[in-house]
Every structure is written in C-alpha cells, then in structure tokens.
Image (tube, rainbow, N blue to C red; front, side, top):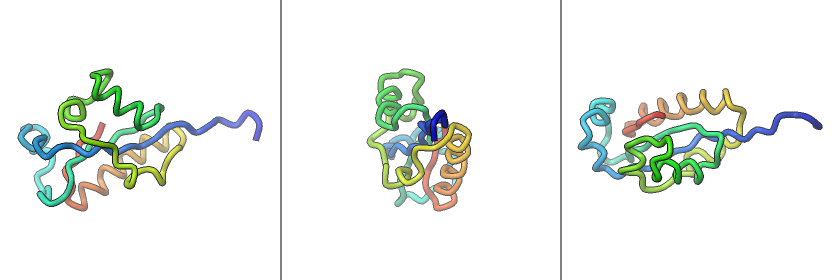
Length: 110
C-alpha cells in the first residue's frame, strides 16, 4: 500500500547480570523474584534492539541497570512481536514486563 506508515518500533528484552539484585531499588521492585529465573530490562524503541542496547551501554539516554549489568539481548522473548507501530510497542513493553514479572522474573521496565 503506497503511503502507508512503515512500522519500525520494537519491544526488546535485555538480560541483566544477577548482581543487579544488589541494587536496592531494583530488588525492592521485584519482591517475588524467583532466583532461578533471569533478571531483565524490558523497553520499547524506534531503533533496532541492537542499536538501542549499544546506546544503553554507551550511556546515550540509557538505563543505568542496562549500562552496568546488561549481558545480552533476548530475541527469543521479543522477536515475534517486532516491528510494530509506536503505540503498540509502548503497550507491549508494559504487557511483556508484567507477564515476565508474573512468571517470577526480576524486571525493570523502561
């Protein structure tokens, strides 16, 4: 379809090193965390997930937990959803973060 907007927003998940649990604010946000499950950051972006992770790690409008503890992207969790419209990405960020929390994951949402 000519002139249709191209969907280019993404939801993404970054695995965080478990040392993030020593951060009081992160630990308090995840009181029901199952220690056998991952710690993650869930975000939405207009960039590719790889570009956004690089920005986090470089401190460019990045989340502190991702900069300090980010290990890798987890496309096995989010790739099926991407790309999507802006509003859908924002909503999916919220829903995916809550779904992972409900499963016992430690989650920080951006």
